[in-house]
Length: 75
Image (cartoon, rainbow, N blue to C red; front, top):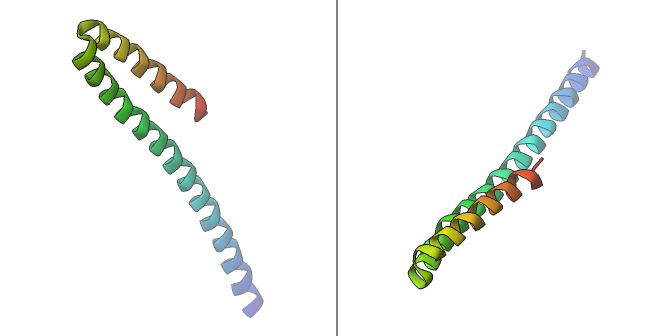
């Protein structure tokens, strides 16, 4: 019976480790997306201040490129 408990605990530990690894990967993806979103909002605002409407359009293009890059990188 002691050996049976030991096997169950080892099995449960392995499942928990796998779940933890998946959660860490998801967290890394969310962090990258959050960084991209922060830059995507900041860059258009700064470019609008310095370049006007043209800067805003350039900033939006950069924002879309960053988001696309974040999704491609995380696959």
